[in-house]
Length: 436
Image (cartoon, rainbow, N blue to C red; front, side, top):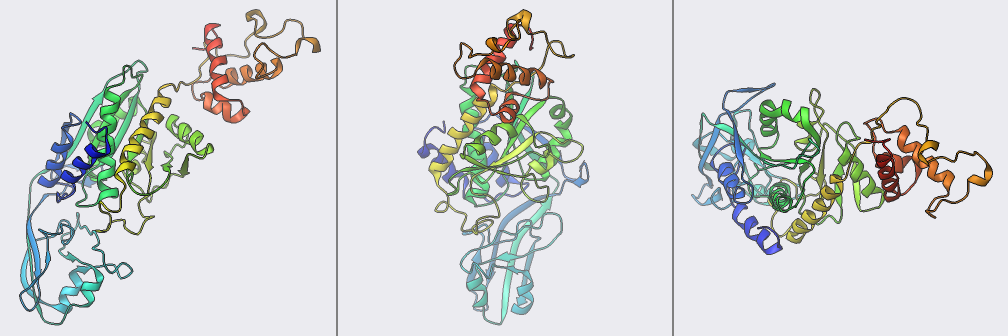
């Protein structure tokens, strides 16, 4: 179980050293470890297969990589730092002058002590990554560059698991990615929080929605999963969340809207933002994670993304400094608590829908409108929170927007009336036979 920070730390420590990529044994080993907490089924897409506009690449096998200086000293070692080699590098074993070698070296001048994370999944290249301070100190001469890698026919593997509830007949997606090597906030926070959420939701006595938990390599994995499961998702999805960068020092959750912008979870996070407990980011197709694929044209699924210390907004992003010292493992556990509470609130979400959709209802015969329209009839109702005129206004708003597209959050936002009171009125309208 992942109920305590200590249990989360144990899982973190096991996953962190594994050299992952979008394919290969490192990814599969990591997925097997997570399968102790989530019983994943595996969706495989073989190398060379088409997934919409993408072709699944060959599987990358990396055994070792190192760089020897002119004196024969090992100055970069994949076995000690799996960020030291460009992910998906082609094999190489050659002596190379420093001037030419520089074309295959990657560093960050503004962060001279950190190793960057660099990939070349879809074009054959090779290279090494190192702190810029070490790069500028390299002396002229011949270097031995060795990368023991190979490519073979393999597959992109996506893990998925359902928790059935189903009284609503609708699906909530919880998704994250598992393809970066040793990084903490940008890599491990999402899948660890996902696994802990699965355990929490599996213990709920009742679930109104079905929940689908998905782990995949970022981008190519969600594209492959949609290629195999997209029609099912499109026919049944209520809302979804992509989990990323949830372990950093950020104080509040940060939510990126779905492309449609008005999903049921969009509305829950909007209410939390109005209370000052989270921030809202607009949908942007040029940045983010797998929500870009779920929300892309053709599918436009109601999937948002939630983070804490947002990708690209912290200097440690995609570097060796995104490590255990940077993250707050207690933030992992806190995030699980917060997202469970949000999903519990979302469980109560219902679209408003009238039984008879045309024109206004005659409310008087149901005791919801005074039969004598006199100023004397418009005093305070038995519920002192609203006078009877305001109560009627609330009822009319609920019924006017009961079109299957709006909910009580919408009515509360339009009227300024407290959500709990609107819920009580909606229950009365259901009992009166006016709402489904």
